[in-house]
Image: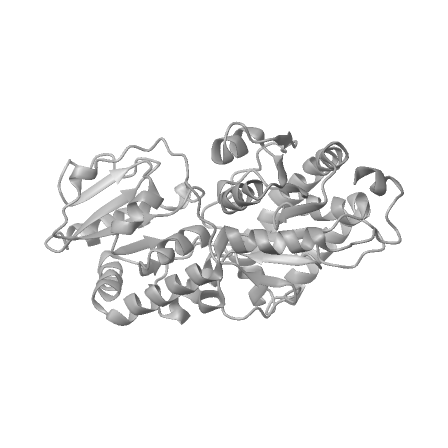
Length: 404
């Protein structure tokens, strides 16, 4: 049996896909530990999970909600991803020495894990919680791509193997993509030769969110509106537009709006629109007819797993890429986040509810997700990687052998 160390950033959406994979590997007799933020990993993966604590940098400055495109990407790297790598690297190395893993599984935004693995001569797999990196998203922005590579080269000089030349966002051994080609298309970006589509990895998720199930009216369609956990500051106007558009269609649908900031707190209790700070999303989706969201990869894949078509309004980061995947696949309608009024949004919701082509596409992708194998198929690939002989690189220090 093998020992696997899962390296994750302090982000819910980047931990969740690996929870099911870790459970599957453990059920097969492998020993699994995590390197990350213990409070978060324990909450999502179970309190008895072995977690090697990793330092987390001070909170980055607030990212202005109007920041978009390359400016938003620059902020993400400079203010979060690079400081996160610098903070995590020493603790990841310490975890490797204590746990002695055979394989590391490294989230794409925890690049320190990849760099430490290459320096210690350990094989590692990429955990890709979004497929945007595999679609050549930066192909049209060569200066931005060169700038990111320069940042990564600087990190490699401090924590990695200076003789290596691979991109730490893409493992040369294995990249697990938690989607399928039916949604994402065939990989075209850098480092795609080792991409394996495994579909979403959905596991039972702890939640403290209560939900008034008796509120739902089975005679009307249910529309779920959510902007994820990281877009509260940008969502006030959009949620208000959603409430107006969906309230106007109360004769045929009911809306559940996730409203963590209380934007709709003054909304009087009614049978048409329910605004809650949080909802048990995975439990709610099987009875949902449409989802309006920001095109976050996890939300999109969770909706499509249940064959639910979407209205997607991307805000920034990978969301425009994922939104285009939804539109191209036919599984939903893309609208503009900052320039959508109640009429436009309402017409988009009408389209995904009334046009059977969107529903058919959503069901087709759901079928592909199930066929891909999810956590079980991801575990198969990781077992194969662990069973492969990977001698340390020529430049790896002698203590790499001790860590194994």
